[in-house]
Length: 153
Image (cartoon, rainbow, N blue to C red):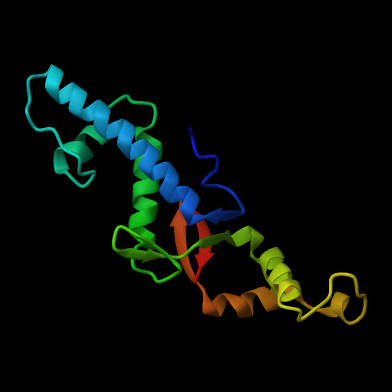
């Protein structure tokens, strides 16, 4: 079953990214190994870091290779940046927040933490949420997915 998420979502759960990576990894390694067998090459692998597999990904016409490479690079960029999700011996941040969504995220976070109330008027409507979001970003790091900035901590 294909994991449903998009690398352009406003908020990305890295556990969904990992799940999709594992689905693609299984399928693509099987295709690579099958092709190696057909060609009489005995260089089968179960390691996505294998240089022959990485080169094959760049030239294959398999429909999932570009998505796999993008997810692979995204996970490599996030690897060992702390967080709450441990996978294959490394720690990853669970939540990635798209830059264009960060102001809304800051507002939601303030509400969830009880700092402001969604149903109250003044002084809540006086808050400069753009400024508040910029200040909150000092506690976050940035990564780039397909040229789009995502924030995590």
